[in-house]
Length: 114
Length: 111
Image (cartoon, rainbow over the protein chains, first blue to last red):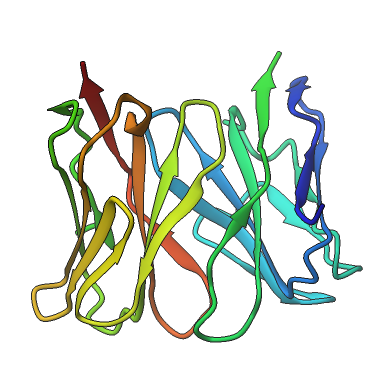
């Protein structure tokens, strides 16, 4: 079955530690996105990538980093510079054609600070 | 002013009634509009999208778009308890292929 796989489902970070969230898709989608969701809030865009080896900052990129070495994979690293990382992280993908921006989401990763 | 605004709710409607969810956006150049449903602890799932002014119907759901007034709405007919969720409005703004989300409206369908 085609889809987006995020792992792990739950992740705990110690102070000063970098952690990496995995996102893999087999939908052959060009564009991939990382969103952060805080309780009772909407989704805020962290980073997005429309093509391999290229990515752009979203609205809240500080304290995060990404890479896009393969079309299928778009990992997100939460660095120690992100002082308030506790949130629900969602990875999404879409075909890049202009009228087809329907986002498909992974099941999410809940990150908490120990 | 937020780019995409929604009333956080909760919006409470009795089973069988029509639920009306509203969303306003600030960028007049916005072209694509989406409604996502999100159950607690789960990821959003797309239920409707609309590009042109007017109404678009899909089963019990109707999306309405008014670009002159810069609002988009979602009507849910014959509301069921399983419709109880948070509904997120999303708008594609600017030239980049990215969506801006509202904070969502929590819908409660009561028995």
